[in-house]
Image: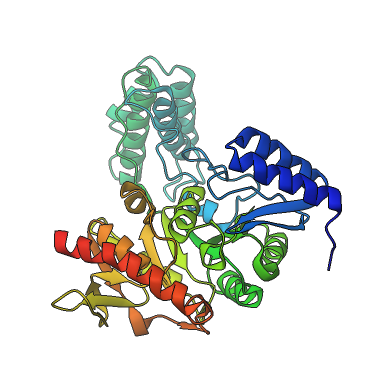
Length: 422
């Protein structure tokens, strides 16, 4: 175990005094000095804790992690999720008569003329005379070409209907070419269906083996991007997250903060961390998932397919409240009132519209219900139709029971108020 040098401990003590005196600028400067010495300082309930600085960038708090601008993607993360977004917008489209539209129409009409002029392009095989007349048409695009007019009126096509068809093509093509300087209203282009982009957000607050299994299953069985937010490198989970980001650079994005999770006595809260992941995401669909949830197949695509303008979120397991609202019961597949945080997908625009995840939720339990009740629209659970299972739910079983019950009740009070309001 690394021993903290006395002068680093002295800097941490000075920083604690600066914070107590509300000299936050001085405290930040001292924190930078501590990091320059190769250590990280974390504030705890009874003082501070010093740990060796890991070999990656660590932000001091969840709030300090920078968020991408609207429409931006984090550098170096142009992975699978980017492929669906390319070309989905209106870039390159113009008003009727715009330069781009005119060039497209010109190319199309000139192509028809060239096809008619090529003796090998059609089974009718135009003669040399027709080809010469097409060449004359192209040479004088802004006049009504006499050659084309003669072809259109010629009486020597009797018994040769293929000549008549070819002549009509030449006539149509010559008219199009001669009118390229006029306003052209192109037909409404067909817009191919574009699959929504998807990102899975993971709060990394310990249990590195679970994290490794969860991410590897996601990479192997889906095309979703993964963003992990490491809270304090608990038990080395942040180091594992960084290793996964290096192993799968086009799929996994890692962020690290010095704050430890609230359930471990730190200051990083569940709601704040989840909202930060939502804002770091730039995809159409944001997936909430716990690291104890393991995919046995592609369980993400079925959830995404359910989402529509009316369906705001779709998840693995759903619940409904009892008549008094104090007890929630497992729901059958279909429409539900609440989705559990083991695994669910939400339209990112809908989640952002309600301000993200509950600000007051310091611990996950019941915060998923609180978030569900704030979302507009319908919620759907698929349950047994999804290829997924859960390992030991450490976020529940391996947390101090007194803390778990206290924070669960605190959040559930807000859930009851939401139920009463709705």
